[in-house]
Length: 485
Image: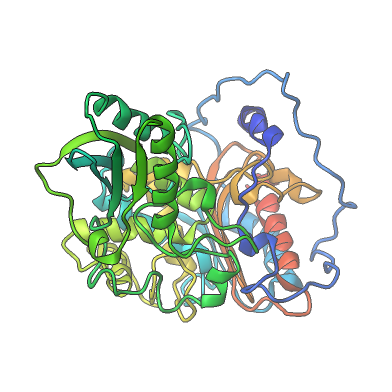
C-alpha cells in the first residue's frame, strides 16, 4: 500500500525529533493567549486516544510506488456524508472554510464556505511562495563572500543567507550549509603570504537592503514588537546565524548581522592566530558596498532557493519568508519595502489568473492582523502547484511537513482517531488567536491523492487553539481514512 510505504519512508525523521515546531501551534503565547479547557468531544465519537506506534529504525524503508492512475475518485456526496460532521466540530467554531480537490485533475470535490474571506494566518506563506518561486530560480543559491580591499582590510558581504553555521558548515544541510569557520579558513589560506599583523573586518549589508536602509523598519509595521521580543519571530535581515533563529521565549538578537560579524571575527582569529583580528562596525560602513575590484578571498553558497523556501514553510519561519519575498520582489523591479513585497505577491497571483476576491495581504508571512484570503484560493494554488502548473512550487508543496513526524506537524496526529493520517498527510499550518488552518495533501483509502484546505477563523476562546488543531487533525484523518465512493 502506498500509505504504509509512506509511513516507513519517513519514520527515520521521527526518531531524531524536530525541535523547531510552529510556535503558534505549540505555545499559547503572545499570539495564542487562550489557555484551552479540556478538549470537547469530536462531532463523531471515536475511540479513546492512544499513542501511535511508529516504526523502528530497523524497519525496511521501501521505495515509494507511484500512485495508481486508475484509483477511484471520491464522490461529492460521499465526502459530504463523511466530512460534514467533522466540519461541524464545536472546537472549530461557527465559521469554517473547506475545499477538497482531486490532485490529479484539480477538480474541486467538496467545499464549505470556500469563497468567504478569512484570516488564514501562516497558511498565507503558500501564497507568498507562489511569487517567490516564480521570480527566484529555485536552483540558484545565495552567496556570502569575504573580500579583501587591501592587506589587513576585509569586508564580509551579505548575500541573503540567514542560515549560516557558526562554526563548520554542513554541505548536505539547508540550515547551516555555509559555515563561518569554513569562510575564515578560506581567508587564512588566501592571505597566508600577506605580512599583516592586524586585520579589521567590516560588513557590507547593501544586498537586498530595502529602500532607505539603514533607517527603514527591520520588520513589518503590523508585527507586534512583543512578538519579536518574546522569540515568536525575529527581525528581517540578509545575513544571520542558523542557531539564532527564534524560539518561544528565547528571542533572536535584534541585530543578527552584529552576531555574524562577532562570530566571524572569532573564527578568523582562530584561523590566523599570529595576527590580531578586530571588527569595524558602524552604520555608514554597513551601508557602503565593498569595492567591486576587491579580491574575493572566501565564498560560500547557501542551499538552493527551493530548499530554503521549503525550510521557511516547514518551520513556519516568518522572517525567512519575508527575506525571500524581498529578494524576489527586488529582482522583479519592485521597491523592496514590506508593504510593496505584499503587493508584489498580490500582483503575481493576479498575473497568473487567480481570483483574488476576498484577499488582502499586508505582509508575506501571515503574521500581521487584518489580512484575509479564501480557502478557494489556497486550494487552487495548492492543487496547481502539485500538478506542476507552478513548477517552482511543486517541489516545495511536495515537501510540506509530514503528519506526526516532522516540521510543524511533528507533535500532531499522534493519537486516535487522528493517527489515521500519520505518515500520510502533509500540510502547512496557520495559527493566530482564534484562527487555525491546515493546507496540504493526503492519500485516501482508495490510494487517490487529494488536496485539502480547512480554515477556522472563529475558534472559541473557551476551548482554544489546542482543541481547534486537534479537530483539524481529526478532519484530515477522516478524509484520509475515507474511500468515499
